[in-house]
Amino acid sequence: MSDEDGQRRPFRSLLHRRPDDDRDHLPDEGALAPFTRATAWLNSPPLTPAGLRGRVVLVDFWTFTCVNWLRTAPYLRAWHAKYASAGLTVIGVHTPEFGFEHDLPTVTDRVRQLGIEYPVAVDSDYGVWGDFDNHYWPALYVADADGRLRYHRFGEGEYAMTEMVLQELLRDAGADLDGSLIMPDARGLEVAADWPTLRSPETYLGYGQSSGFVSEDAGLYDLSSVYPGGARLTLNEWDLTGRWTQTRAAAVSGGADGRVSFAFHARDVNLVMGPAAGRGAVPFRVLLDGRPPGEAHGTDIDAAGNGVLDQQNTYQLIRQPGPIATRLVELVFPDGGAEAYCFTFG
Image 1: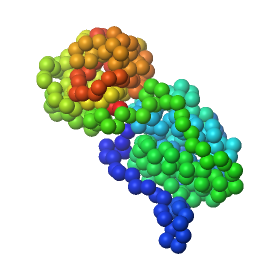
Image 2: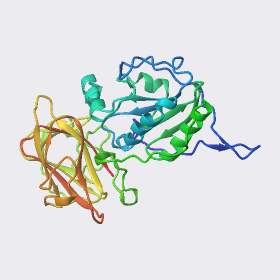
Image 3: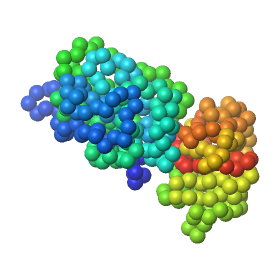
Image 4: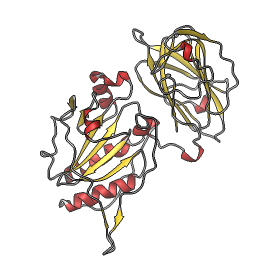
């Protein structure tokens, strides 16, 4: 996902050419910030810059529903596995975007589900985020063995560049490395986006950051209302049908057969969603151009389009195997009781 104001900014490589010779070098970007304002630690006791001296440190800002971060996760796990014994410490800083991501038992469970074995600083109050002056999910900061920041990367991608930086700093600290680069096996939500066909942006359903909602009415904010639906949607427009409450953070289904429709252009459709407060498992169904998705179904539904919300998470609804065009995805909640936060695409 993007930074907290929804903006993305272009990345410029931080490898500079020395004017006096032909070697690449990395700039000094200041001291590694502390982690003292973390609210909890997972997989490790609290870590400090002083205690990490002598090790190269990769700090990764993430939140568990962020699809942009999920697509970096295979690399983070692989770098930890390959380089920890050579002197690398990976620290994941979990800074939540949505309210439910503040819940420590939930974060702990997601760390386990995602196979994260490196230390995680839980940053529910944005203290570490502020000390790093960070603005993005995901964001990487790399410090050398002397505790000096030497590289950063905002957003996904540039994995080979990042790994070469890690290797350079580890060698500077005395590690003997062969120079090979990892090639992780990504699956499900962790598979890289199909960038050439991706024309739909991250889209929030709560009025705090919503865009493209054809029936949006500020007079209905935070009120349970019946939306008629039926609008003809053009690319990147979406609509609600049935009884919903549009809150600042989410659209909440309050009646039977509530529907969310989105006109998209991408290989993948994902939606951050979960059961509303006090609800158990919530069934839902996905239609693609009015029909069951068949072989275009995502990992969280079957070919008939059926799925179940059993936790607040990112659900993969569609992964198209064929040519990509503008299409209509619809989610139907037969019994209501769903909270839908944000569409993402890949």
